[in-house]
Amino acid sequence: MSVTDNTPGTQPAARPPMPRSVGMPMHHKIIFAVLLAALIVLPFLVYPVFAMKVMCFALFACAFNLLLGFGGLLSFGHAAYFGMASYVAAHCAKVWGLTPELAILAGTAVAAALGLVIGALAIRRQGIYFAMVTLAFAQMVYFFALQAGFTGGEDGIQSVPRNDLFGLIPMRSNRALYWVVLFITFGGILALYRITHSPFGQVLKAIRENEPRAVSLGYRVNRYKLIVFVLSAAFAGLAGATKSQVFQLASLTDVHWTMSGEVVLMTLLGGMGTVFGPIVGAAVVVTMQNYLAYLGAWVTVIQGIIFVVGVLLFREGIVGVLSKWLRKPL
Amino acid sequence: MFELLGVPPQVLMGQLLIGLINGSFYAVLSLGLAVIFGLLNIINFAHGAQYMMGAFVAWMLLNYAGIGYWPALILSPLIVGAIGIALERTMIARLYKLDHLYGLLLTFGLALIIQGIFRNYYGVSGLPYQIPGTLQGGQNLGFMFLPNYRGWVIVASLIVCFGTWFMIEKTRLGAYLRAATENPELVGAFGINVPRMITLTYGFGVGLAAFAGVLAAPIYSVNPNMGADLIIVVFAVVVIGGMGSIMGAILTGFGLGIIEGLTRVFYPEGSAVVIFVIMAIVLMIKPEGLFGKSA
Image 1 (tube, rainbow over the protein chains, first blue to last red):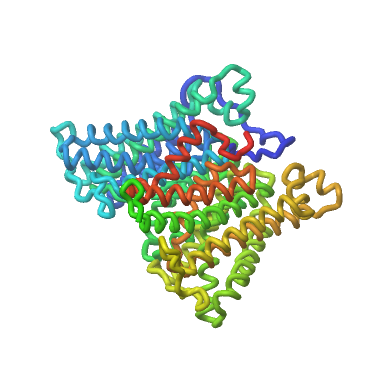
Image 2: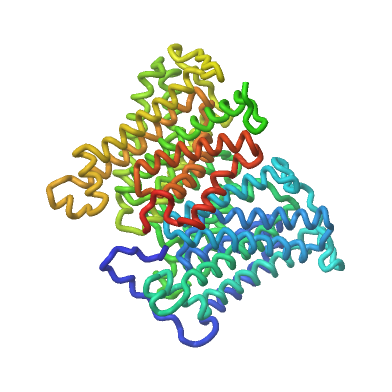
């Protein structure tokens, strides 16, 4: 789905041209630097687990945005990769005693493999059907997680140990883990940035804007779609696996369709197809859930209202509006 | 009594019956989705929530107004359909010129709101709804016992499905609908009020969901989450059948319900996922769906 409306006959809103120079535009460098500085200070200001949760979800939303914002593919089943990676990482750490980096890698690899299988099937349909197919497969993964032995069913995998990083550095304190999570999520988001601003990313945009033309230019569209699907699933898995280390828990919540909906919400709210939108969206949604938790089921209602208002009035999202205002792609 | 592959016929028939009941709901719900998709080009994610509303409105009519099952079977779809029409007029109609995926996101938001509100006021434990007096008891068919109400659900679903099929494929109104699906501008040029037709179609599709909800109320307990997981299965049904044909939606719905029931007999662990597995196979062999037009 493109950020612009696809009314036939209307031109997409004029955007400032992308800088031709290789590498990051200056204002992106500044924002990333400020973000990093803020994240370094953050654990001294707020509860580190909360900050780590925001970072994991920011990475999850950025991974989702790679697929939706740049690939134009709306997956309604990203919880499958997030949740399955979380289960695998938790299992590796608890039952096999693997070190955190290996557990997270294993989770990510499983998410990528799952993305390869589901993606190969889902890209056979477009648009609305693609969304329904991904949702249905994610539900299948949910039932698997409910019934399979190693996931612990309704209980999930609880009290996952935080083993020593590389077998050397103790990770039991939240502060120590924070730096690892910061490294993973920030690095992941930078990697996603690099992917979207590469020649590969440009081809993706071409496919999103006009698929028949991309085909006629000789691009193997389905191969690109599959690659971006697998990448998105892998980064979503990285986020989920990291989250299981933070909370020492993998549960059915992570694979449920509500989680898939939440990541769509974060991306929509922050701004689809923007670099920083998903980060903002994740921060807003996680903060909201945290502070409004006492409202119980009303949180679901509020999320629904944000969806409705966002779709009707606010399709560019927070960062999209800012970006229009400042006339700079953010 | 004969045995089939080591399965007693009572068990087999019992599961077949449950499969047929589930298939009835799949058929009515995917039919509603297909009707809405045909004219509005959106996937109504709120369909599960509207099915749940149908059951709840029937429960409310009984408990707050003393109105029984039979009037509720008509009233509840009318009420929920009217709510659907209001939603279409105020919100969904604004999205027709945008990418279809926005319609999916909007109706997903609506589903969250509706489900959240009901969960707040009625909890998640489920409320009982009595089988109407005229349909209590059952028939002994010799090889199995058929509860009257379950038989009625299948019959009612079949009537509604084929009534809808007849209306769309065989009547003048249906011809307008099919024409507007193909080319709304041209139909509008003939002086037919297409926007009103779209609104009423959405109301009708939503009403179908609510009708299924009322049918379901005495079988499953009335529960705010009753539509949420069901709708995902119905999406898979729709992907398998393809939304190109009304009859296709009906046949796929009933067929998959029966297959699911049989799976529960022969391989119970797989019954929750068998429809998704079939979806994967269909995507590999005939991606546009069994009855779909390539799009």
